[in-house]
Length: 157
Length: 156
Image (cartoon, rainbow over all chains, first blue to last red; front, side, top):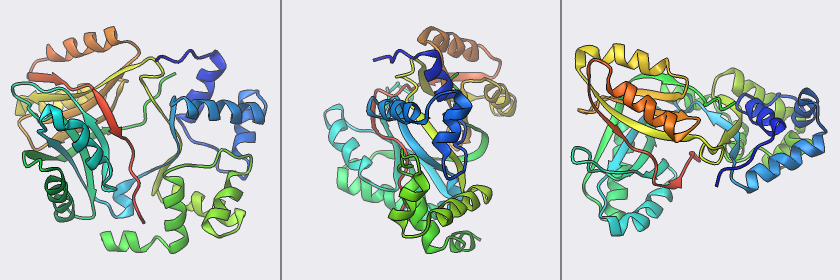
């Protein structure tokens, strides 16, 4: 479902792709900036959240600085009839973020993706082994990033 | 070094991070709500969040939106670049507005990036353009078919 947005909605979203003011009353300050009432802003944000347009309002962390310095993209080759079950198990791991099913190609047979996080690569690889044991999916590969070219937040409007 | 970095988070900061990485209160006085949950004063909660932001542990306190629900089309791209062209291709990819994450990875598919465009047509067009760049040997578009989980909830 594509959500129909008003111009004011787009302004709210554009503003929230940036940062909330770090004040005791961030919503009142933001509402003033946008030329609307605080109650109306809070109500709209509540609706965005309920409808899933706003996935999350919260802190985006710089993981490296919190001690989780090992990050790997772990891709799994899961039989189609086991995707649902395996995906749920993977999602239940706190060390796994971004669990997605994606299409396969002859030269890319892995259909489930998890980003794994650990304090060290060893810790991360132990998580992968744990997931493999719990799901019974033994065919997986971990791709580490060797260079970050870009990391930004999406600007929609 | 890692232990040192972690060591710099005190128990209150850990508690605050655990709370606000999931959800920042939709409340006229969000830091008061946060303080109640974390067991500190409102001013203290605000000061800690500000300090965590200044130290770069919090990258941003804001919204994460669902691009599909906003009508946008996105994908994850696995690209195989000729090694001698990789840096150049990576720079061209990074220059695209809809690219938010772009990494070199240790695999035959050596460049991985996310691409989001206002319409599926624009996404297809952009992918076709990239595929034609010199040094691009393979390009595989891997759009999400099913989302099981997004975001991280670390325990600090």
